Image (cartoon, rainbow, N blue to C red; front, side, top):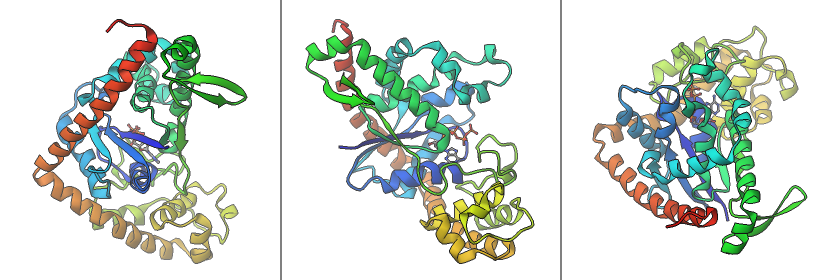
Length: 350
Ligand code: AQP
């Protein structure tokens, strides 16, 4: 059985990368799976402690989930700080994980910059909290963008080390199951999480520089399409998107060494639910002056209903607040069950 978990940080305006890399996949995975989607507000204070309107940001991420088509009745939508067991399990994982593992994380290096000694301890321990977010529900599948791959490998390492270190206690508690990791049989309490990263746009790149990830923190608003952008803004940003002078190739091979062209074709494919090969079969040999207006139409068609619904939900936030409250209550029940089992396995007295 798949238990799908993923989260989004309330740290700024959501953009097309967050939508295609994560939220759109959350929606698609609802059918036939048990899904838990979280606004990870504890993560939001790792890089920047004070936020001007954190509550508004939390609500707007939840609104984006609902407006995109996540069903909060069938699945769970909540904000992380409402379920303190995430932080409690993260503490245990801080003791399981090694400092060297955290120091190797590329996101930590990027976000901490040169002045690493001055980064928060929370930023260093971010992947430990992320592992706890997933494993407190014993999550098995995690839809994320490509930038989160390394953190998910670390979540597997943490789960594996916990399983091995507490092997005997897991066995006597009767709470584990036999699994095989690689060649090795393990009596596991925590499952090995599987990242779900595939699709034509696993890493959406900046519209100004095809070698940089589209990101909330890029100072240039022209570098990204925000979920709240209107038709004029989307059109302007795509028309101004950096490209090379050549037309589109008719096969994906021809996108090699052309990051901006590759990015726009990937975005089109993801929005149209097609492969890049199919998109090039349609547009191969055409100039960007033909392709860009088609991309504008497609992006507006897909995004404007979501934007409209997000605006509506944000006018009176009582509906979103009620969803988050109920989701938090449901999540807490599940999280407390796992945490009790973890306390028993470790040997805490309760
Ligand atoms: N450019 C991207 N392409 C594909 N997926 C992306 N994601 C983020 N950027 C891209 C995915 O969106 C989910 C939520 O991300 P997040 O808010 O938790 O954190 P982030 O990766 O730090 O987002 P940003 O926008 O890139 O913020 P900054 O500017 O702070 O670095 C994740 O699944 C992520 O993979």
